[in-house]
Image (tube, rainbow, N blue to C red; front, side, top):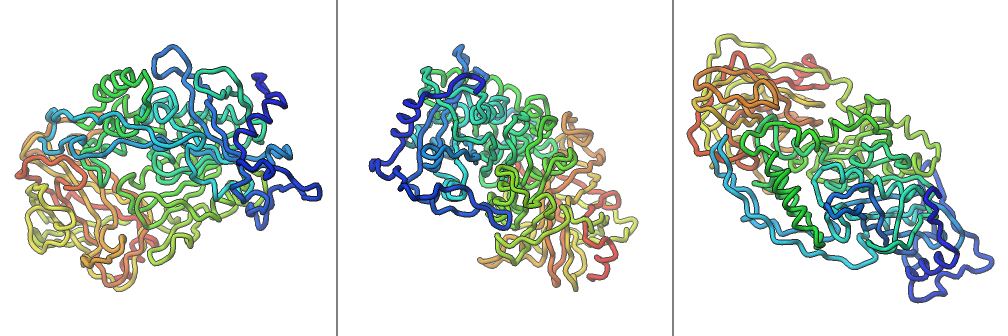
Amino acid sequence: MKDGFLPTTHQRLVLAFLALPLTFSAQVIAADEKPAVPVFKDGEAQIVEGFKDPDYWIRHDLWVETEFDSDGDGKLDRMHVDVTRPRQTENDGLKLPVVYNSSPYFAGTGADEPENFWNVRQELGEKPPERKPFPATKRTGMRPIISKRHIKDWVPRGYIVVHSSSPGTGLSEGCPTVGGDNESLAPKAVIDWLCGRGKGFTTPDGDQPVTAYWCTGKVGMTGTSYNGTIPLAAATTGVDGLEAIIPVAPNTSYYHYYRSNGLVRHPYGYLGEDIDFLYDYIHSSSGPRRSYCDCNVRDKEMLGQFDRENGDYNEFWAGRDYLNDLEPFKAALLMSHGFNDWNVVPEHSFRIYEAVKAKGVPAQIFYHQGGHGGPPPIKLMNRWFTRYLHGIENDVEKDPRAWIVREEDEQDKPTAYDDYPNPAASPVDFHLGRGAPQQGTLWTTKIENQGTETIVDNFSFSGASLAQAEFTDHRLMFVTPTLTKPVHLSGTPKITIRLACDKPAANLSVWLVSLPWNGKEHAKITDNIITRGWADPQNYRSMTESEPLEPGRFYELTFPLQPDDQVIPEGQQIGLMIFSSDRDFTLHPNPGTKLTIDLDATKIMLPIVGGVEEFNRSL
């Protein structure tokens, strides 16, 4: 090992003994018992009898030294790590690959009380009222087990499972930075240790070494939400030994999580959340450097640079956008996301998948029709890890690139496609016909001289209520004829809109919906909302620069909605709804702002499988 931290035989026995069940005889193997080894069938790792009994697993924890000092105490931060491995890695000298999961949540989180969110009742462009920080989070959990996630899935199949608490959480040192460099370098340090290049210790401040002599040097990572962001963060370092990652609903850009095209936008269900709120929410470290982190990371860096007044993209947000850090990326990527995830919206996965694929790195994507979370079926994950961690040539590289769960299917029964978006999809432009305050038309043929129509902003009405309204001046609705055949959308819709405002600033929200609206209690998640998008008209030039609107002047802007792959059934109409404040996502300015839409200069592009010819055949 590079750093000379091979334990003596005595040290190994002591470490193993400390982690054993109370019944020491459980570790004794009969003389005629054949040692357990990984078993593979049809390109997948199988559950092995000798690996599956948790009473025979070895569990221990340690601290891995990083290459950074984020809490300013003059010492390199150390991350708290736990290990769960089959007894054969101790008794038989068996080496196995690692499935690694890191998180800021393992040690507990703050309580998301209403008074701790930002107050969204404010005028656009004005300084927001101050937010009340959380009280300190109390750490939960007992050593040596940081988490039990993924253990039952992977240890019986011949893997070691490792967890770590991210910087400034649990018993890990340092500061949480919510996407800062240390949150990439922390898992890199753990992988370096697993591969024999880093330093591990039995305590956070001692010098007794621990080595991963049981690891093959092959590591895979997975996790959901923030836990899915960390595998991506680690992969952007290009660390050797990280062979494959399976991020589930990862946040790949904190700007795209808290902003949309220059607009302050909140994740669904967390109205008033911003990056400083998330910092408080995860900061569970109770060490003496806590106040240093609060002052330097939250108060100076975040509150000083996150620009909640204008919502512009700047250097602060660019430093928390993993798309900007993909040059060293080389880990095989299996991405997973839900098309109806309005917390971490589906563009997060798609933007990284496209970029990684363009680099020539092995990449697949799994999409389902549900909301936040939802890993790929275990079969897909198993094939991915079997190929890249165990090195079994199962031809996973020749599998279809895209797996999509269709609207009526179970989560573990996706349909295979050559890629996403569907290669058979092509862009179709739809034009607007007047009809406010009721419904206008949405058609592939442009009708001239439609003039303008006006929206009056009022955040009091939810998007769902506006979509169902027969008559209202708080939204514009444009609908296709009723479909006589299903229409398959696959890709990212894009709207070009020309508008004027009677004030210097306004929210702009766009929904694509399926009508008639299903208001029944057990309506499916795919029944009503197809996809959505938001933008700040002040950012009509770029996301990096706001320009106050000149009342009465028309501006043109183009922006994408969220990616989708959905089959709209016969009997439905596709509706384009344009409105201002989105009650569940945007700030809530005083009602009354007027937006005037130039119908002749506004259109929406929908990616339709089979193109305009197939759409016309569906009418």
